[in-house]
Length: 223
Ligand code: CA
Image 1: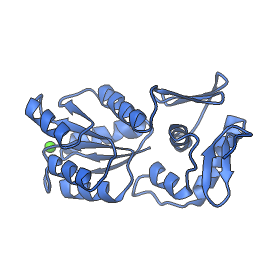
Image 2: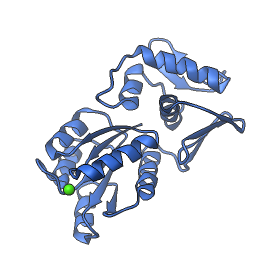
Image 3: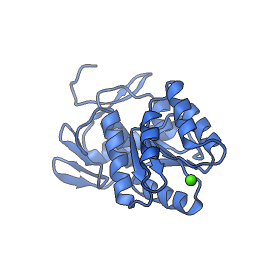
Image 4: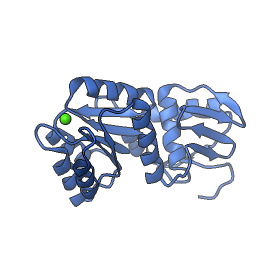
């Protein structure tokens, strides 16, 4: 899962970026509205955290343009203080949720999880598939009740597969949703991570679809 963070206060942006990254997401960040608009327009994000008061282009205009151009990713708007007019304007512009400053990081993470969960069609923070279970709150994984220790990137890959279970996911899509824009991307690394996940999970739930990509599927499942 990859998140775009657009916030111009440097201290808050750094704190947000650290919190969101520590929760298992890849994060791209900028303090400029215009750059934020460009990134959201050209990169596939699983969610966006968007401040309203921004240099370059204000957050409402950024959001309105994305929606006008059909960009449908979930957007969490950060409003200055508890101004109801900002909330109404944000929701009218296409925000999926809002959070008034100041806020606690746990609430931001809970709202972010909920947005990603809803946008991928899941009702619960616990995602399950054939004995495999991930708790997106704790970023923890179990197989048949036994805890499995994963690295941050292994977890990110598994979480993306679990959110999109049953679908064939191309390597390009996986790379775009696993890494931030500064990461040196190499599509072979996906193969390596899939191999490690298969080994750690102890069963082959990640099927290779020749020439297409990968799919989370129980053995014997028809395509
Ligand atoms: Ca601001």
